[in-house]
Length: 188
Image 1 (cartoon, rainbow, N blue to C red):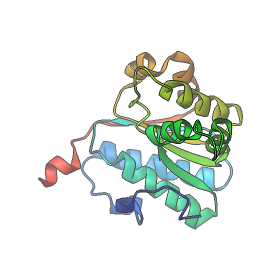
Image 2: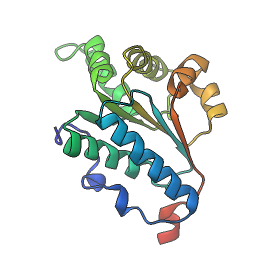
Image 3: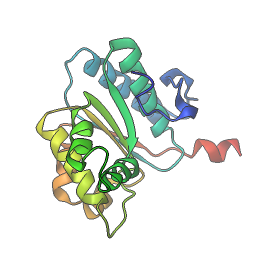
């Protein structure tokens, strides 16, 4: 399961405890996210989690830690992916010979838990928005927990993704704001 989890190499052993504590808001986000992961692991939580904030605040690290905790601690199939990766897989399916578009979308809709990073990075003219909406719609309809990560706020996501997608993303979701400073800038 770990091999197919899609966790980027730099986060392959990510845990919540590795995150350097920078402020009380961050400590609260980590605590709430850990509770959400535990609830999903016990089968008690079927809602989404949404992480919003500037770059470098640890959103991807926390989400990869969540994927790894669900796999290692609970035996749950979880997958990390960016919206661009899903779009690329769909576009590659059009050439034939491999997985069909509907099969790619079905696969991402079927993961028990999916982390969808960079939901705000879409090409304006292309299939990205349609593909993202298809995955969101499928997962929402099946009540499969999804973690959405974005550098935008909710209002900006409405403009980028549309009200329907954002409504489904935020419905009964644990919404976590990450307004603290960029870790990478602090280390530079």
